[in-house]
Each structure stands twice: as structure tokens, then as C-alpha cells.
Image 1 (spheres, one colour):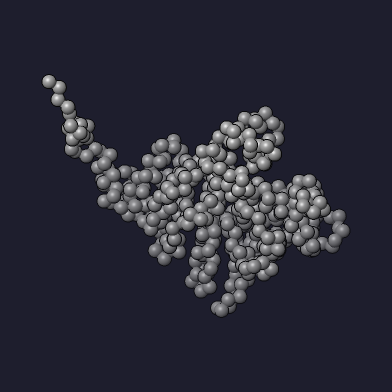
Image 2 (cartoon, one colour):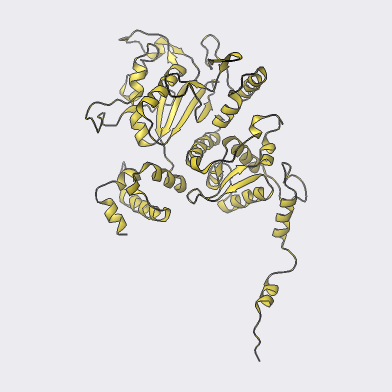
Length: 419
């Protein structure tokens, strides 16, 4: 006679009464949370050098995705990195956000995680609000730029660090800011030597030197903090702005005017002069320059469309940068040649670069949903199919068009929806 095995009997046969080694280790991680987690025998895991690199990056940037961790920090495979970060979540060093499908897993540090890399108890980096989902795309795109520079061995200063260290007015906060800048390799300019010439800000405590604030008296706010800073080998600073959407021309013009006065110029030279920049000599200021990493509409607004003609008015359009730089006696020599007009020279006062995250499908999808008109947007699964069609169609082209431009071809949407 055949007896039917009950569900309880099946469970008892397949699930041992004694917890597995994996569950025992996870329980240890939960029980031994704190900044020292993973450093002692019996913690259920062992913290690695790359784990601490990740904690340092996420503390400074505020949020980093799993895919970014794989790309820039960990040398191991994706699944190994996922398990490493899960162990740090168990150990109370990280929090995880899984509600944005396009981003995958996003991690930000707990207080204990920040204490691993911030050794001074009074450091302002220990205070932090959880990252907001509404601004997550911009935050992650800035993190992408920062992590790329860090992977190249460059020294950076994040917007978060600039806000925490530069906003003080007391002697103690200024001394702490100066110590932070010195540790990052920032140098002051002495008698027009390569370095930073700080601007002055009037406060209730008197005039204060500012290194990381851009004075923008003609913009809507009097001061601006860039999204990121790169510390150059000369001790100078390069500001980096990640711009996704168009600003009103008047507002952007006010920001640019602030950068024109803050970025490196040349010694005063009469208009019509034929002397080169090398002959005239540099004029060191607060920044060596500013680089805009932006979407195509923002790039066109800054340097003008490739055709040189405004598609709406039909008139010549050279962008917003050149008219401002051309009007200054200490800046008008920079954008005279055809090559410099393209603003691709990174060591010039203003350079622009098209934002490219094609190596990260999640970030690329979210960016496309932001910049494309509503009728061209789609759920993630549908977008992936359309993107595969685009890749097939432009595979043999020498200069392929971008996906946002390709999808706006007349009749393209009708063809894609039939798929």
C-alpha cells in the first residue's frame, strides 16, 4: 500500500533542523553590527580592502549602484560583488534601495558605515540624510563621473564635501576647510603662480576666503557649488557640472558669467590683438576651468548647434559661452579658432562633453525617459527591445546617430509598436 508523504514530512526531509553555515554566518553579522564589523574572528565575514574602498566612495558620494561598484571598485564578478555588498548590509554598514527598477540595487552608508572611513568624531561627513529618489538619477550620474575619475587615479572633491567644509564662517571651520583642501592637494596661487585664487564672501563675521563656492551675482542665487571638482596636478581645481535638462537662457547666462570671472583667464589684451595666448600669458583664478557633461540640448545651448543656425529663428546661433567670453578683455582670446569653438579642449576655461552612459543600460534608460518627449517613452522591457533594433540598424554606420535621435524619425514609432 502506497502512503502519501505529507508536506511536513517533505519539509523535514529537505530542511535540516540545524541552521546551515550560511544562515549561522548571517546571524553573526546581524549580531555584531558596527564600524568594526568584519574585522574580527567570529563576525561571519571578513572585510576586504575593496569593501573599504566602496565605503569611502559611497560616504563621499551619497549613493552608488551595484553595477557602478562592479565597474569601478571591485575586480570580482557581478555575483561575487552582490554577495559582498549584501554582507555589509547584514553587518549594518550599508542600507539598500531596491524600489527603482532601472537602477537595480542602490546602496548608501549607515552611520556605522561612515565611521569606518571618517576617523574624526567631529567630521561633518558623519551627518547624512538618506538620498531622495526624486533626485536619484542626477546623483548617480554625478557618481558615475566621480568614480570614473577616481578609477583613473584622479583626486576629486564631491559636492557633499564642498557643502560640508565650505559653508562655515568661524575660525575653526575655516581651519578645518583649509586642512581638508591641503590633504586633497589643492594649492593657493602666489603672485600668479599655478594654483587657486580664492574669492571673498562677506559674512556677519567678516570677509571669508572661498575656494569651492562660485560667486554668481547675476544669477538667481548669489553663489553656486558645482556638482564635482577635479584636483589637477598643479594644485588647481576644475569644476564639473552634470546637466540633464535645459535651464532658461537668462538663468544659465548668469551662471556662466560667474564662471567667466572665476575660471582662468589671460592677462588683459586689447581687442584685435594678434598675439597668442602663450605670448599674452595666463591669469590664474579660482578654477582652471569648468567642464559641462550634458545632454545634447544643453550642449547645443552652450556652444550652439552644429549647423550654426538656430532651428527656430533661422538665425546664426553661436551658443551662450562665446558671446560672454568674447566681451572680456581677459577672456576674449580663448574661443577664436574653429577647433576651440567646439569646446572639446578640457584645459580651456569652458569645455563641454556629451553625457554618454551607454555602458550602463539602467542609467541610459532613465536618462532617455527624462530627455525624450512623452510619446517616445516606454517601459523598461519595451525600451530594451527598441534599443536592440536601433543597434542592429546603425551597426554598420561610420557615424551612428544616437537612440533619442533615431527614435524620432518620422514613422519610426509606428514601426516599433508593431513589434
